[in-house]
Length: 220
Length: 132
Image 1 (cartoon, chains in turn red, yellow):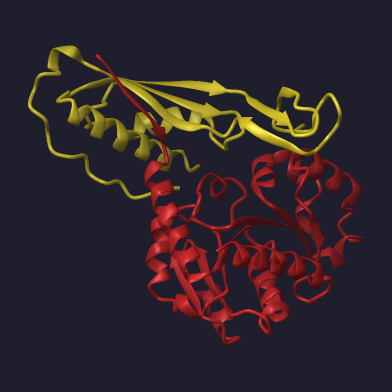
Image 2 (image 1 turned 90 degrees about the horizontal axis):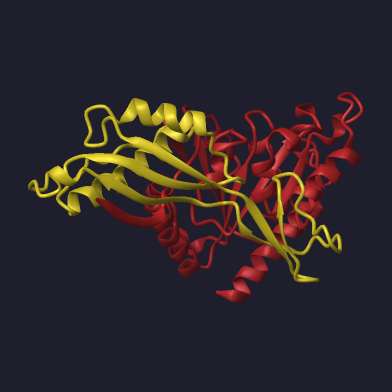
């Protein structure tokens, strides 16, 4: 006997994500899911973004890692509320983890919530958390060929940050080939070269994000 | 390797549906996976074989239908199939395109053993934590 089911496999995650999204919209918060490999500079990019936007927006961060609270401590040291999620081995964040983390934040006071996903170029692409945008970081030392090898994440990201741009000469990174492949995979995604730890060229990225925050405020 | 988590979700849905219909054995689970998802067939089958023993889906077949990627050009309205590397409109070269299919990840149906479909329902399936 056949029983029809016809529903998304990740139905439970997607239902919880939709509930998260309703919470974010009710509080008027723009939520960014930041994805990258381990070591690409997610936390440094978040710190640079905070430096660029903290005068205009009230910001909090959710840090996702398999273990430790190293990242949340780095963010909190800058006076920004940070919640650490330890996935205990899971390679990505899911909506129920975000929901639990929200209880530690004062949502009514926030404009921007940045979620730092677990370092991974594959799994986080499949899991909607209720965010308004997914953005990814590739760092120069990882190589310009990564979009060929991990196309999925480049396709789902609304913008691509190219971090550690100050090392481009050392690593023989072919920027024009990189941009060409990214634009064929995801024609609408802008590419923002930055050097997060030096704070170089962060403005264009920060303005793009501010534009998205403002557009979201106008909509909700 | 998030296929373990994917298969856990599949089994939860399948066991819920089977239990609701009073079935005690699942013989086949059919799913559709878009070509643009980050899902590997081999890893799905491996996770399925690892997670089904001791459940009502023990010994069941996991049948995967792969759905190709297709987009529509918002400028010239051409609908075209493409691979995961080339999204641009092949007719006018526009990058203003809308993805129609390719990101599906759905459980379609299950096949349950008709001989046992009249057996009393067992309890709800246990929740399985997400795994990498």
